[in-house]
Amino acid sequence: MQSAMKISLIITTYNWPQALGFVLNSLNGQADKNFEVIIADDGSGPETKKLIQEFSARSEITVKHFWHKDNGFRVAAARNGAVALAEGDYLVFIDGDCCLMPTFIASHRKLAEKKWFVAGRRVYLKQGFTCRVLTKETNFFNWPSGILFIMGLTGQCNRPFQFLPVPQSNSARKKKAKSWDKVQTCNLGVWKDDFYGVDGFDESYVGHGLEDSDFTVRLIRSGIQRIDANHCSPVLHLYHSRSIPERADKESRNPQRFQALLESDRHTAVQGISTRQPL
Picture 1 (spheres, helix red, strand yellow):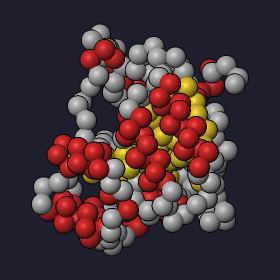
Picture 2 (cartoon, one colour):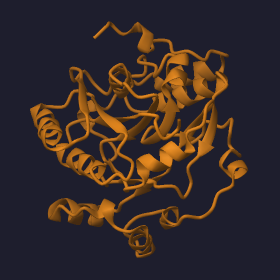
Picture 3 (tube, helix red, strand yellow):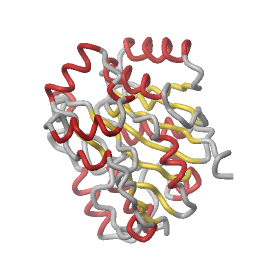
Picture 4 (cartoon, one colour):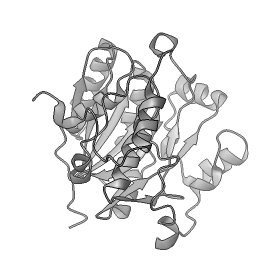
């Protein structure tokens, strides 16, 4: 049954088609082919649309594209819109600057367990290495994990030991079962039924930050617990500056929204996927 489960891979993007192209190319080498791709586009321009269309035309992977108007940083709404298109039983979220090793989908499938969500890890590629691979169009994501490990030891990325298949017991993976801290949507797996059970991401979060923490807190409150995916195919995060000035929300109310959630016992979104208009 687990092997028959279809996975919907949700990729969030905004106006960096070069990085998204690398991420999409990393999908072609996946050992596990039973997945679809849905781009959660937070208002990118026509170059991104063209890239997606060209990749879809030459790939056997089913690719869907959710897009909404660029009206500031609204990734919670973009992700909900993408999930509304999902046909899979299980959702895996990544970002459009995070390339995948060939075992990524297979690793999420192996860890998927009813009433649990999977919190994956991220390896940051350093600026110099990112510039080189983007310039030379290197498919570094297909390199053996041993090479990536050495790359980390020589300062080309952080967390080199994430590339080593260090055995993890079931109890070790579940030791943070009720902790929301440091769970991020650049590498997150959750059953679609559980996603809808908490009404998805809260679209009242506008601007960068805390929409993923809000989602995780509500998942845990609803009885869905955490499995950590340490040493299990981390995403490879391309270097970029931390923010886009024109999309920065200088008066973000996200911290107040999140604090209000923590002070409540609520497990559903204030403005969730159920409030969206039918597609």
